[in-house]
Amino acid sequence: MRTSAVRQPPARTVLEREIRGRRLTLGEFVDFADRFAREHGESGTVSLRHLNRLVAGRGPGGGPVGLPRPGTARLLERIFGIGIQELLEPPQVRLDSGAPGRSEIAETLVGYYGADEFAYRVDCAGDERVTSIVTRPEWLSGAVTLEPGSERFDLVPAQSLVDPRTDVKRDAEMVDAPLYRLLDIDIGPGGVSGTFGRVSFMDYALGPDLLEAELPGPVDTWQLRPRYLPDLDAVWHLPGRLCAGGVAALCAIARPAEGNRPADYALLVQRRSDRVVNGAGRLSVIPKAFHQPLTDHRGDLPIRATLLREMEEELFGRAEVDSAAAAAAAAPMHVSRLTEPMRWLLGAPGRLRLECTGFGLNLVSGNYEFAGLVVVEDEEFWTRFGGHIEANWEASGLQVYSSVDTELTAELVADDDWSNEGLFALLQGFRRLTECGGERARLPEVRSRMASAR
Image 1 (tube, rainbow, N blue to C red):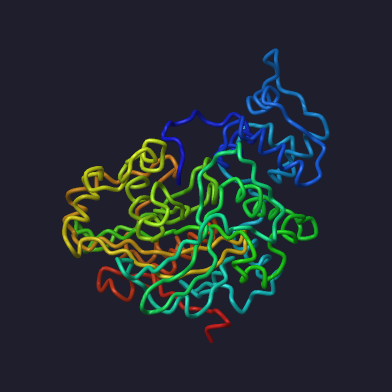
Image 2 (cartoon, one colour; image 1 turned 180 degrees about the vertical axis):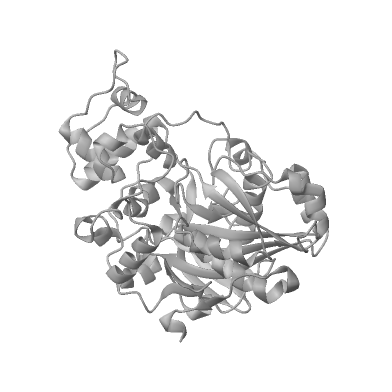
């Protein structure tokens, strides 16, 4: 995900954490809030000087900051879906235990959209798991190896991308990173094809990204969902809405036998930090990223390009890949700029395999989700570079599971702290590794319970 490579101190308030999570400076957020108020009929305003006091949690004399005026409080509460008292408090490490869990939210969304026929639902380790991902049998029919020729994507010129379903206006003075916007998709045995446009991150943040903040509340309190993603027809109709998204991939690295452990795959799992836009505090596979261009908007379209870039940043410590330094380079992923582990992986055929294991649309915010699998088959990599693997700032922790430990991987699947897209990628990765991993993969069986696949 594109961001500054400079580490920031911990957020002082929930408000500061939420602003950082949207990848906005305080000045940009002031513009954001003003634009949001105009678009949603709110009377409140917030100045940069006032915002600096609010995020610090301290008033001019150093004492606790007082509550803002009612109009400003309503504006901030509507933007974040969090009460003003909580916004001004120090952030907690974990989510409120009283908030609905992932599976409860998934069931609520599936019911809201009448999407049971298409919901990604499986039996695994003796338990049923449901997600907010809607998909089709042909999108799960088999793994597609991501290599030159298997991804056939078109890019629509930006000037033709007028979104008829939203009233968002584009302000020329607001500069932010572009995202790809999905317009059409087709997945089959021969590869993946589709059509993409581009959209500013600000338009995404002002629209679909706001839907998640409403989810802890009762359905009858949702105000934005009826506007941006009202029904299942709107979910499927990609050209009629702003559909951004990304890829989450299970990383499996072959390891030689050691002690009582037989040869296996090291499976990498992260807990997302509270500074990321999506899935803060949740478990996810790694790498996980927005699908977005760097310098070559057409050349960066393949999902393979996103996965390689995020492996460099999220696993191998190359902090500048998605920063301003990378944007200034003509070819940020040129072999001369790669880390030593990545250069070794790409140095000979057969060392690294990237696959798309599934595709779906996430009812949380309408995002498209590519599920992926990153497989390193050569045990030499772990021996030489296992110590180089280290999660970056986007993760608050990294865990390693053995692909031959059926008990612990079953517990992993049952954990309700997963993000929906992360669990989708994990389960599809388990299914694929069971098919191709031989004795290295003794994983819980994953059986589809999707009504549309029966």
